[in-house]
Image 1 (cartoon, rainbow, N blue to C red):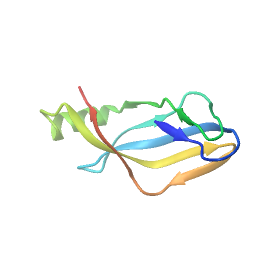
Image 2: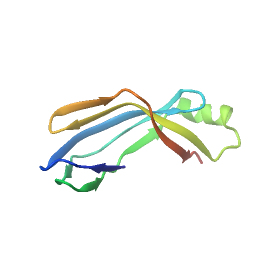
Image 3: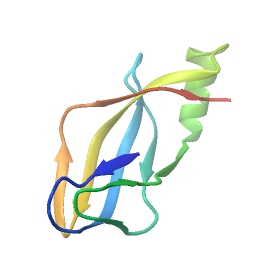
Length: 102
């Protein structure tokens, strides 16, 4: 994901985490997070690498609810970002769009 630092000073992104849910069924599929700190220079856009994995229940959900699909529409919920020790929480879901499930 891209993070644009619109402020006039450098930031350190200490953490990013969120739950990944199936948009169609509001079913939790897994979670994402970052593995290490990210520096965001003033007035620049920084790419943040997030990683995650499906739960076993998510695999079963995809097999039963999306049997012939090659991708599933997902939202991020409970997004939490820690920047310079300040925690920001996003209350509204964020649409990611379709991601591969095969």
